[in-house]
Length: 208
Image 1: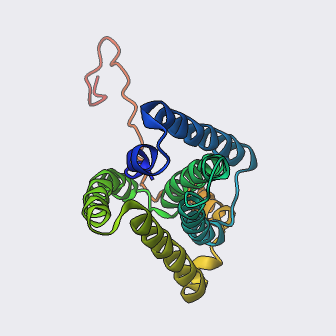
Image 2 (image 1 turned 180 degrees about the horizontal axis):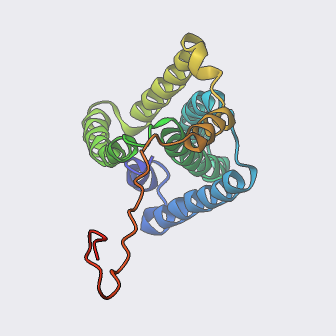
């Protein structure tokens, strides 16, 4: 959404740079509320929440874009209100997806798996470039609706076609990890040999 926000602010909603700042600020408020909620509730049904979150994010994008066609005040008030939901859904997905990776990653692979998180920056740049080309060809509103449909269909497909992932519970993964860490590490203990200082008149071999 951040890629298309300047285009919506300037070309569609006609609210200028100040309106763009307001849009991004509202997104930040939604993100903050969602982050506090996730930290407080600590949801565990991640296999169900994450696909639904992606699908709901797609619906929010479609509704946001569709509401910009409304005339008068409604065409500005409703998109601004939907920016709260967009920011909240983004934050829920980002925080819970990282929590999922931490929970399922083996100890020896966790660092390598989490290093792939940095790849989302390059993918965002790639998606922004693709979105810019599509917006130039078909318009920002049509492109945003297409992106929303992709998110909606993708989330629903994951939800329907991956029952194993859908049944994933973060609490169970945490329990398995704690049980694994409670097991002995299997490292043989090394008994330290005690050395006594020889008394005067004795050698180290114990001979007088």
